[in-house]
Image (cartoon, rainbow, N blue to C red; front, side, top):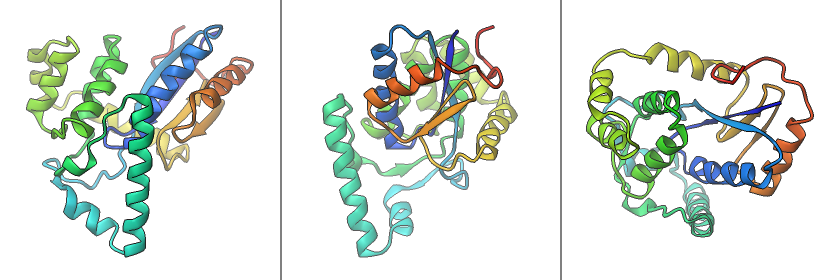
Length: 224
């Protein structure tokens, strides 16, 4: 039986980049289990305008107390340390723009349809957290498409339309209705779930446990 792991995540979530690396490592640690990894959209803040906002002003508004700022600094340092161990080059101090991630989720959807979902996620995380690019901007998304060998002309044309806008919204809403309020979250065969960028060892145990359970339903995009 194939274990379908649905990774629910946002492309502006630094823990989700770490989570991507760890679930990929977990899959490699459990070679006896046939795993299909699917990516599902989640917006940490869907109120961000399409053009995005100033990053520092946005973060200052969300974390205004000295205690909150201290916790944020500690979290960022922890992420940098984890990132160094996982070869993830976070550059938080260089980020100036907080994008709206919705169109980036559309790109992941199109890439996933071509078997390039993981490549799209990795390229978008790197573009935002390392290259500090605006992953809500069409030109950046077109360039990312080019990097992962999607047709940039087709992606440019799709971005000008409403293609898959409703599908992405509905998919994100499904997972909110399932009670997901934090990311990354991994759902195996719609039976069991684990939340957070857990270690690859713990995620490998999660995968093996999921392989012993029958799925409740077949997730969209899963193999027959």
